[in-house]
Length: 350
Image (cartoon, rainbow, N blue to C red; front, top):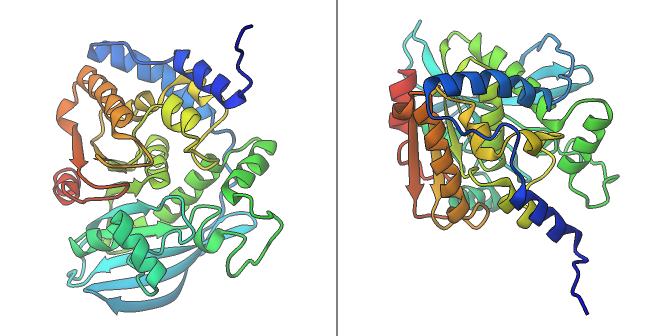
């Protein structure tokens, strides 16, 4: 008697392990890199689908307060028809009149609090625990280092989670809203990624126009799902001159198919048909990129995370940009260690 597989997920894992993406990078020279990127990047970006229509952001300052050496601002902005977002901005105190600082978009990951712990909100035990567990307050810390930092909630999180204030909707019946939004978006020819990228661009437009910000010195960083958003914001917006992807390095057959460790905010139809994650990260080249990996990360296992990074080093080498790729391999769990972030962004943003 034969033993046959009845597990659909095992089927997907085996399919993914044997899959070779159409634009998996195999080159060795700058010419190979340039031709690969010129062909692959437009096709990769096309998987995102349509962008939502843009609108005037109509920014309104809701509150301003001082805390831990920073001036915190809470704005509300319009990001597309029918939807707004709250925007948190942290301004270093002591900025001289007329001085312009570099600014960093700080992308939050998957979790109920959205942008709040990232920007230093430690006003409850649960928020303090999130910061402690993941080094999650990089928006606050980088502002204390002298950068202007800012963040919004991606759809499905924080104040834009339909289950939470001020929305109070229970129609999802315990299902993950970020997966439901992905289904809604694809029905309309979009993706959650295309929507979130458009909203991140709108926030960047508002912050770039602030008198304290130098619009020519913009960076982006984020943890986990925020690492995915960091990657896509960089690929979709040339204004970002340097990026730090925190604990979002791996191979899709492993973290996606085997571990089921991804969701609707991270994917696009047909993306893995074209590229694996190291190829996607490699499309950032030759712009500066800092990769942070936790040696004891239980979300993105270090074994395949480092395989991803090794493939990425080959792409940056072929691009002639090895000096613009850095690794922070820290001994911790799934989180930001901040060992190289300040020096990296100072070097590349000034």
